[in-house]
Image 1 (tube, rainbow, N blue to C red):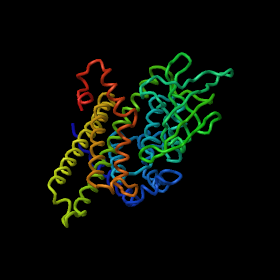
Image 2: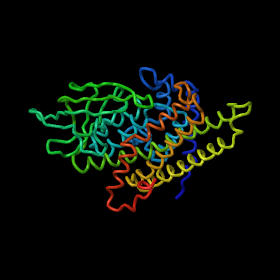
Image 3: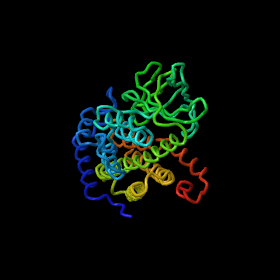
Image 4: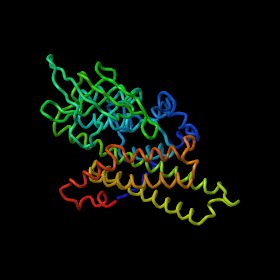
Length: 379
C-alpha cells in the first residue's frame, strides 16, 4: 500500500498551502476568530473558487468528486496555518451524511448548495450531559397534519450560528434513530451562541416543536450513515492535526534558536534539543498513522475500527505536541497573540471532536473481538 500522496495530490497541497500562506500572517487567526463571523469571508471565497467546498461532492451536484486522500492533503495544508474556515464541519461532514442517507431528490436539492460555497450546514449530534454514542433524547413526533416536530437540546453544535441548515440526529416515538433537516431560523429553534476551546463558534440549540423533514430513512440506514460519516470525519481531522503539529514544531524550533538565556540560544541546551527531537519523531509517527488510515479509507471505505485507532493515536500526538510546544515557548506560549497558543488550542480541541478519546475507547471495549483494535486499547 502506497502511503505517499501522488503528484496531483501534492499539487493540491501546495496550492492550498500557498493560498493559506497569503492570508495567514502571524496575527491573522487571532484577529479572525474574534470577528463576528469567526472565519475570513475572503479566505472562504478563495477556497470556494479553488473548488474546495465541492471537494467531497459528486460532479453531478456541482462538486469535484474527490476522495479521502484529497481531503487529507487539503486539511493538512489548512492545519499548517491554523486556518479556521469550516470546510470539515460546515461542508464535508454534512455532505457525507447527505450522500450516505438522503434520497436522490434530497441530494439534488442540498448538495449543490454546499458545493458552491454559498452556504454551510451544521450536523447537530452531541447532547449536553450525555456521551457521544448514547441514544438521542431529541424526539421527532408527528403532528396532526402529518408533519414532523422536533423537541430537545443539542450542544455543542459547531458553526450553528452561520449554518443555513441543521442536520439533527433524533429518535421517533418508537425510539428508532434518524436524521432530520431543520432550517436554522425555523419557528421553535433557540440558539445560545458561544465559542469552543479553540475560539471557533459553537452553539447550544433548543428545539421546541420545530418543523423538520426526515433525511432518507430511519433505523439501521440512519445509524450506519452516522457511523460512517463520523468515521470519515475522525480520519479527515487527523490531516488537520498533522498540519497543526508540524506548524507548532516549526515555530518551537525557530523559537529555541532565537530566544537566549545566559547570552546563548536555547537551542544550545541539550535537554531542550532532545525534547524538540522527540517532538519531531512524535509528529512524523502521527503523519504516518494518518496517511495509513487515509490510504485504508481510500482503498475500502471508512472503517470505524481504523478510524478509532487512527484517531486515538493522533489525539495522543496532538496532546503531546500542544503541551510540549507551549512549555518550550514558556510564558509567551500561553498568550492569545502567540500563534503557537492557537495551534495548541486547536490540537486540544481535536482530541475532543466527534465524541473524543473517551467515545473511541468505549467503542473499542464494546467490539466483539478486542484483538482487532489493539492500538485503540493500548495507545
